[in-house]
Length: 108
Image 1 (cartoon, helix red, strand yellow):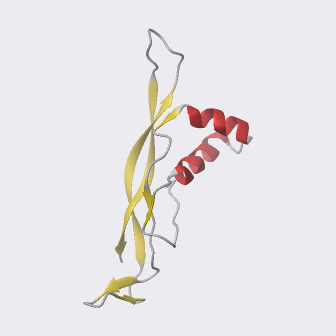
Image 2 (tube, helix red, strand yellow):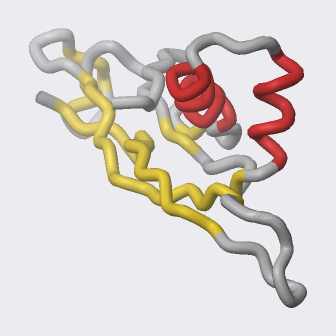
Image 3 (cartoon, helix red, strand yellow):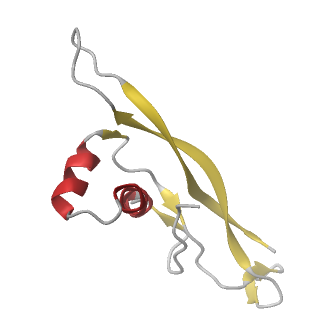
């Protein structure tokens, strides 16, 4: 999976972390110039990504954190479009890239 797990906020509205991780995997650690070039050719450029606030789970009427359970991210497949060719007739062509994005948290 290409998503990252964070531990300080429930909803993190900057999924460029997951996309940048994908780019690093695909490009094998090329320089930031190449990553910037590649990043311009994908859509959307950022995707909201959730991460879990707590290590445990909030239970009971008062919402106390319990360490008997573990908070873990829930992933959903998402599509990123990568521009593949030059503009032909005023239109670009795109290929699909599939990544897993954290969309929420659950208790296990």
